[in-house]
Image (cartoon, rainbow over all chains, first blue to last red; front, side, top):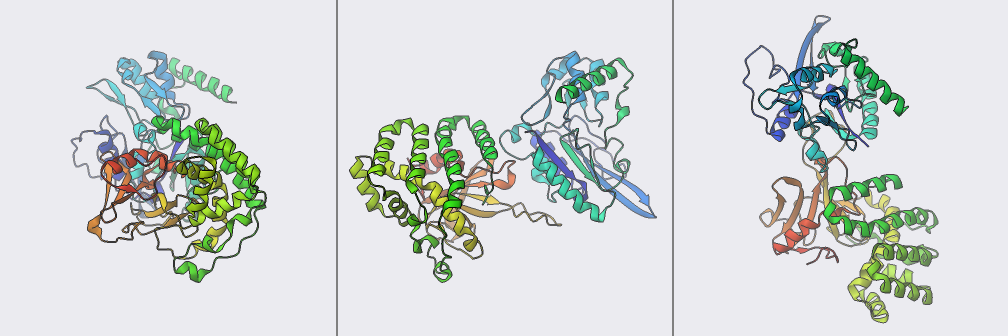
Length: 244
Length: 303
């Protein structure tokens, strides 16, 4: 059974423990950043930052609402990035059936610049980043080495509030449902994001756009009319038929 | 109880996961797999056929007397021999080298129909004489006899502890030995309190002890040696591998005993308590090399 994260943003205090733990575990170097008038730091995901707590504020009824969104790869059940990469370099991106983890291998360095762009554009959540030094595509790997040894992903282990949760998909779906019912009492707008199609389920209390424009799957991330867009649509449809 | 309510399917999945995680231990886990499955199916039947047991004497419990001390446990199970024979079959399947011994035991039960309830009582009361008599009569090594009887009687012991646990859970138990059968623990684990609280979570955990005989689990303070009760912090220590902080050895410098401990708060899957002592075997080796002794020496964990 695949593994699933439940990220309950209603409990997130934006301490960024998950972001730091991820960097620590993967041994990623620091990024040089600038003061941009926000706590969101660095500004975006990058080859040295697989996980980023996004800060977003807006006004509602004259009151400031400050939303936190721990952004990371969603480990899609049918990952478009893998379908795209497979058409160029086989096994550049693999999906581990036991855990559901979508993994970018060293073979991503054989993807040419056009293919890399197609892979990046195919992601409905705008996650993959290219390490221009090594030529390898990077993103969250579900702490694969840890979970194969029964250890929680670094971000989940570090979370002090219970916002980050991880376990068997079935248990996590039950957990998310139970948690959502509770959160809804205080936040009637609360909802789960893309629970059917990804292995990272967010519980949010506000409209998705008030968090981050790619919080929910963005259909415009790739052009469905392009040659590649049609190819992806075809593959996804074949896959769904096979499952059905 | 960590594994309470585990279905047969979940049990299978968990056994497979333990095997995958520990390819080096595949042999030993494979040997015990049959026993665990047989035990589980027998336990389901026993819980409905078992004769009712009376509530334990709470005053005696409060003074540290285990609950089963006042119960003639053997007489609680009608037709014990049938279940015993089933466990012997599982034992033989998992340990083909014990073929001669299991055959001898099987014949012995056939000729002495009332012996299994007596063995159950002997195991609970630590009456080595009865077991040693059996070993002599069958010409089997005492340790092997003890191992075989313990394995075959596990479903009965666990059924008894399952029936007794509702009484015990309500009370405070500050001893290092089991409140139900009086045996010492074979391993321990740390568990985070899961109360879905609305404030920050502590990263610590409560220590739970797993009984080596009846598999009951009870909570005990972390700063006390379960064997000798030593509470001096400068003589209690724990060790772990640099990159594997959740598997630990807790040692007592006073009595020179050790016990393994798993911090479950950092794990994805909860451990299968039947197999946890085997998963901890590498730590047993290290602890014994350091000169410490297991609280409960088992055939597989002693040097």
